[in-house]
Length: 279
Image 1 (tube, rainbow, N blue to C red):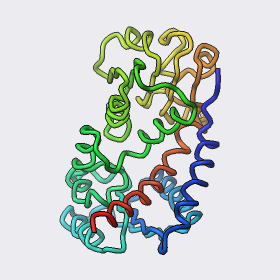
Image 2 (cartoon, helix red, strand yellow; image 1 turned 180 degrees about the horizontal axis):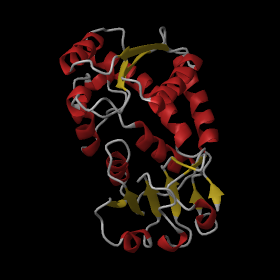
Image 3 (spheres, one colour; image 1 turned 135 degrees about the vertical axis):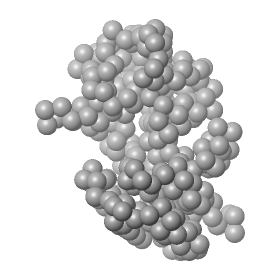
Image 4 (cartoon, rainbow, N blue to C red; image 1 turned 90 degrees about the vertical axis):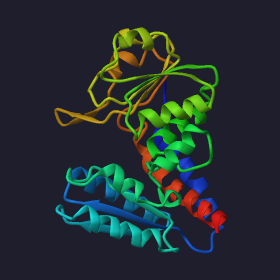
């Protein structure tokens, strides 16, 4: 078994990104919008701000009260869409239930959609066209590539069908010629599929969901889960019992997680390039 070290990969990729940034006359500008006071969101925003500052991005944080109307929020997004100096816009999810998150996300200019969640960018991903890709999904592919884990021709199982992880990573794997099975909470006999998979990506938010009995020998396991159990962070896999049966596995923490914020900052850089090319 080999550990997939997300912290090490992120460090190397950050150095590559910093090198590319030295060639820019002006550093990119990122707007992060938070609505309400979700405590976990504040932690994630701080992580983004810290890395943005390290890269010398101009990080603009906009906080809006819990009861902002949809019309008011859409108007704010429109201001940033129309500002030619702004390269990236992201909405920190979740947002309050009275707001239509699909409508709010799709209000973002697709060229500035650094979370890769607009319908335009999702469609471009399905059609294997250049665009901005959801950060965690792209981070998973970058980890597989870094460790030279074959994707083409592999049997891959993705457990979880979220717009942030499951669906986009299934599309990315399909675009790379893997045979992909996408499973979810309504799927029957999940073990039937996972036992035949070369790569298993699990993102269901259930601690210890994937067990040793559910995989074949020497499978590659990518654990996207972050769950708190008795004040300890654990993933969606039974890591201790799994680790000796697989060829590669991501730990939690320290696997996929470190890549997500890096991919966001890389998306801001890519968005800036896309906007420049469009102009």
